[in-house]
Image (tube, rainbow, N blue to C red):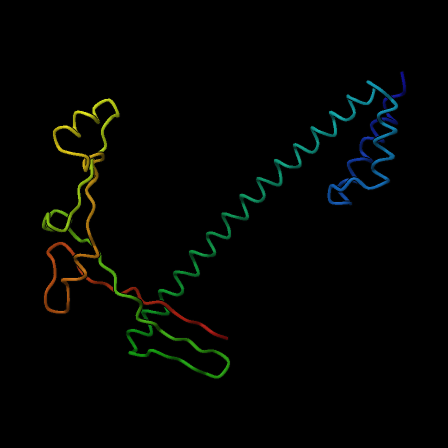
Length: 186
């Protein structure tokens, strides 16, 4: 049986070469793998050590990626808060555009969207109901109510509400809102 230390070094060299070659099987890697194969069953333990080391390295990198992802999400939230403050300042100042040559900031009004403030006040004529039933009861329901009832879920028809809503008339429990946003260039 061969000495284990040279096998450990050989296995680590394979890992190092694979790392340097972005996991490509180069001629050098192939030669080392062939050398390991010739050692027979004795190379299994050192290769298992390599597998363990790679697994630990992978887990550490995943943890680091999760930390960096959390920091990036925090940065994005801070950016959104800064944008909200800029919007508020521009609205209070009554300014839609700032231009100092290198920096151009435009406050866009945003599209109109419908916000539901109190679903219970919305008339049923602006709601759609769908029903979900177990398959075993489907035939009974089809016989009694017809094919149209297969699921139950109350949904507000915002499109229908927007069609009848203008500046003077609205539907109870809803309001038209605009979400302003910034266009920053420079």
